[in-house]
Length: 374
Ligand SMILES: Nc1ncnc2c1ncn2[C@@H]1O[C@H](COP(=O)(O)OP(=O)(O)OP(=O)(O)O)[C@@H](O)[C@H]1O
Ligand SMILES: [Mg+2]
Image: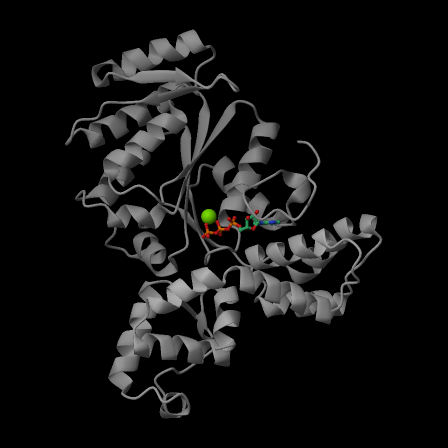
């Protein structure tokens, strides 16, 4: 991979060099997959689930060319058919030694679904789309799994934003998926998701199909000291350092959440000559929050009056343990307890508020900073 102009990546995965720590998490994931265990990876948004999956797959493919890794993000799929199409596009044709062999096997397995195959001019990799009739999604899914099983390769499939399957109207989808995957001796899965409540329920309730079908892994923030060292590795060639104290200030300002830290470090890096002190860090954060102002105004305009007041109050408090207490309600003049309860639920459902074990916080940390200025 060529050298980046800015080593603090804020979109996607750009290689191990730009990836901070997560050594333990990486090893844990690899060990699980290696030992025939599926993994369920849960963390709030922007902590680094997707990055970790890509990092793990990157390492596995380097270590072992006989293992094939597939990453699917099903966030934008609305039903089983779209998910199956995505799976077909991602997986079919990638488990064969030559394009001819790929075409032959695709024909053999999917001939009745009139497959259309195109080849990427750059990578030469095939991309397959199928003609899936309604009611045939499940059969097709089964066939894709069978295609993987017969390939002889060991396959790891990551399904990111997995909780999305709960939004499909297809009945019994969890049970179907579960029944297929448990008979695949050479295919293991990573199920990742950010809706902790939905994910945990799916994988830990005894009456749900996915119960005890995987090892659950809750992903924490990147360790502060490791992150500090990582940051300085890139600032030092610029003739700068960030002190431990100033890094702590930055890290805690955004609760240690990876994406925000990356965004701030990315900006700091851009201003090559500036000493990295708290005043400068504040200035950078202000700049980032200001850029998102139109987005935040939209969010804010979409709230009811009580939701807006409640969200602003939570932002001002940073964290609220008992949002239904008289003290909190009267301090922020939120009126009736019942309407606060309803508003809180709506804000949680819309992922505006996040329920941490210690209390409620505004989910988007930059939005929180914007709200405190109101
Ligand atoms: N260990 C890391 N070191 C450096 N950058 C990272 C690391 N992990 C993630 N990132 C960066 O932080 C950003 C957010 O990470 P990522 O997209 O993996 O989070 P996520 O948990 O999948 O979030 P979402 O739930 O919103 O999909 C990414 O742009 C990625 O480049
Ligand atoms: Mg993600």
